[in-house]
Length: 158
Image 1 (tube, helix red, strand yellow):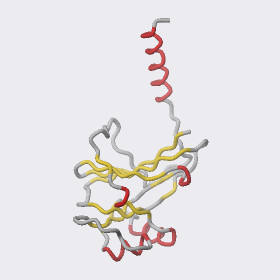
Image 2 (tube, rainbow, N blue to C red; image 1 turned 180 degrees about the horizontal axis):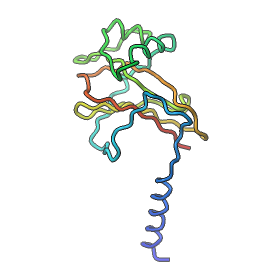
Image 3 (cartoon, rainbow, N blue to C red; image 1 turned 90 degrees about the vertical axis):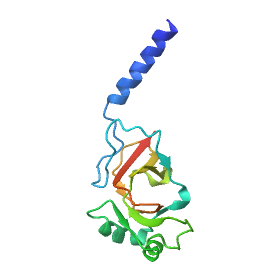
Image 4 (cartoon, rainbow, N blue to C red; image 1 turned 135 degrees about the horizontal axis):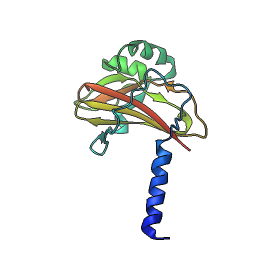
């Protein structure tokens, strides 16, 4: 078989497989808000992990109440410390913000945060073998400015 034909067949089969609905979740949480279809992430900057902090379990319900109607809330340094269970690390020129996050499999993944101009993307990627329900996880981020738009996604690969 011609190499070009073989490559075309592989590419076509990959496209067809990618078009099928292969969701990794059994239920979609209301915090889930993907960016518009076709959004290119090549220009998005990744937020340094030292500026991203998960809300501790004992404060998760308080965080959810604050994020009930909005995807992001500016915090004081003291509020942020209470939410993460310790003082924030030094990050000159930033303010703490409480933001929404969702995940599928906490044990096999992690959060990444990306910024492009006034847009923020909070993404959790994990591994797993079967679909599971989305779960909420609030985060405290140290950002230079408040974003105008917040996208919240998660994914799972086998």
